[in-house]
Each structure stands twice: as C-alpha cells, then as structure tokens.
Image 1 (cartoon, rainbow, N blue to C red):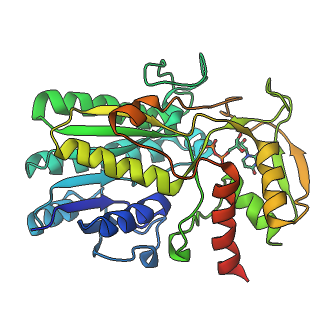
Image 2 (image 1 turned 90 degrees about the vertical axis):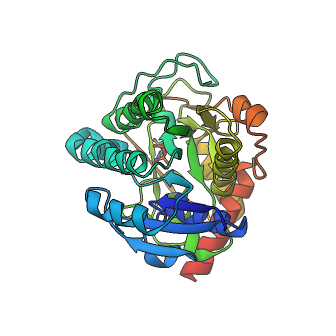
Length: 326
Ligand code: UDP
C-alpha cells in the first residue's frame, strides 16, 4: 500500500504545491482544507475533504476513514499586521485549532508531523544570518503563534511520542508552471505578487514600506525562497522522519538577502515594465533584515535549493502571472 499523507491546508499556495510534489513522488494524498483562504481547483489530485480544524469531529472522521502515515500542516493565518490588530483570530486558528489536529494525531497513533513555522519566531535579529539557535523573541502574535506550537510539539513528543519537524520559512515566493498552483492571496500583501500586479497593469504602483532602514539602500532585506525548493525540503523532512530520524527544526532560505528595491529592479528587468514606486511608511513589525542560515537543512536533510536566484524565482512567478491574466 502506498504511504498516505494528510495535507492540512493543502488548498493554499504552499500546501497546493506540496500536494503536487507528493503526488509526483508517488504518495497517496488527502487534502483537508476549509477553503477559507484556499482554492478547490488548486488541489490537483488525491482526495479532497472540506473540513475545519475547529471541528474535532471533522478530524476524527478523516483519521478513521484513512490509514494516515504522516501529516503536513500548512493551515494558518499569515498576516503579521492583522495578527497585531486581531490576535484572538491568530491564537484561535494557529494555536487552538492546531491543538485539535495534534490531539487527533495522538488519538489515532499517527506520529509524524511536518509543521509550517516561520522566520517570524525569531523577532528582531540579534545576528545574521539566522541559524536555528538564534533566540526566539517574536514581536507579533503571528510569530508567537508559530513559536507556541513549536514548544507545544516538544511537549507532545515527550508525552505522546509525536515526532515533528518544524520548518521555518523565510520569504516564500515563485511558482510552479501550473497556474492553478500560483500565489493568490486575497488581499495580497506580499511584495513579489504585488510588484507583478503593477507590471501587469493591475495596480498603478508599488509602495516601498520605508527607505530609512539601516541597510545598504535603506529598504528592507529579505531572503526569498522558491516555493518548489520549500516543498522539496518538506519532502526530505518527511522522509527523514519515516527513516527514523529525530524531531528537529530547520530554517529554510537561500542565505542571501535582497532589498525591496532590488526585488523591484529585478522585476523591472524581467517584465520590461517601469514599475512605478511610491515611498510609504514603515510597516509595523518589519525587521530591517532577515536572512536564513540554512546549513543545517543542507547537511542533515541533504536539501539543495534548485532555484536560488532571485531572477529565476521572479521569472517563474511572472510566467504564471501573465499566463493567468493575459
Ligand atoms: N513590502 C513593501 N511593499 C509592499 C509589500 C511588502 O515594501 O507592498 C516589503 C515589506 O515591508 C518587507 C518585504 O517587502 O520588507 C517583504 O514583505 P512580504 O509581505 O512579502 O513578506 P514578509 O517579509 O512580511 O514575510
């Protein structure tokens, strides 16, 4: 029988790319998603169950119906700004609902979990690049919700032998060739998709959130990672657990930072559009620079990003964007 993976939040951007990768790797896949932010058509194969993590009965039904070997958990709210205004929404969804998932796993003796964590758990960097040992001092409820689950997972392993790998994403972007798998958040808040919307004539300009940061050109620096590379790391992490590897946490990025202005310039070259900019205020909760030290994932998981170039990542996103809008 094929190994069966439950992908929670598999109708969202990264989750849907993961479902695709798991299917291509020969796994049997069950997607569980409430479609609050995901899209049914993004789930390109396997079983689909519309269910809600807030309803333990939805979960119990899935775990009873299928023999699940491992779980990947992508379902969470991701907007830092919103999490500051409405923290209850984030703790309910990202923490309380996740506990329902963990308890269902324990109840049904499913002991392998890959958890989508975030660079937001670190807060303001004490040093760069950020390795796994870096202090965890999240500065917003979104980051704290992710860090809470990482800590809860350590307790669940001690008490219930639930094994997990926490993958801390830096800035996910890029796209697979299939337009159904593209990034489509509503509202879109992420830099690269917004920049591409300007290039496609869907927005008049991109606002640069601050150019007085202590960086070489004054705009924020981030470590952008291709969604396909991110999913590849999940696949390796899952195999690591199946082979008996220990629970762990890994930072996932390319180890190279690009400023907001560099991203816009690269997009100008790729799209051949002038991409007008407007200077805006700093966005609350934005550290000046975030760059990953991903050497642990490279050495322990044998992960090797295939698309480390910013231009490739933007080019892939642009190809899918134009396919979809022209
Ligand atoms: N950013 C910007 N204008 C926008 C959206 C984002 O200048 O319209 C900046 C943002 O301040 C951050 C970087 O782009 O420094 C990446 O932001 P994004 O929201 O894509 O990801 P985050 O870093 O919040 O995970």
